[in-house]
Length: 89
Image 1 (cartoon, helix red, strand yellow):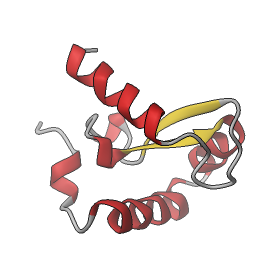
Image 2: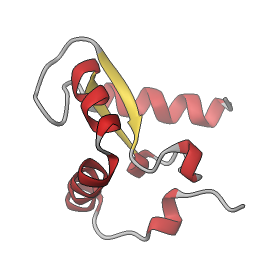
Image 3: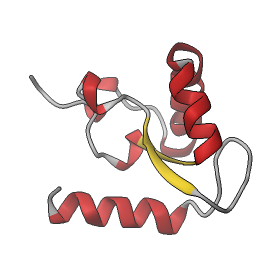
Image 4: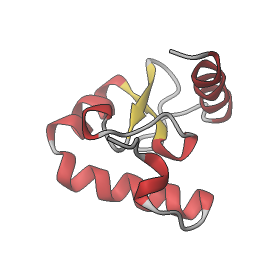
């Protein structure tokens, strides 16, 4: 992980002090909305803080949750293109 990516993770962790789905403040993890396996990048618009329980829930039903989490990010950051948060092949 690059120094820039580490700084982005730290910024997201410092800004998002609770799970964006349930509001818990413990056992928090950073989730890639567009998965890294789907070429999701480390742009902060693609990163969201979730507790471990919600993180498992999101991974169990990507189709439903991915859309919901992207809508949350659009409200927060304004409209952006999916290409902005994915890596080039």
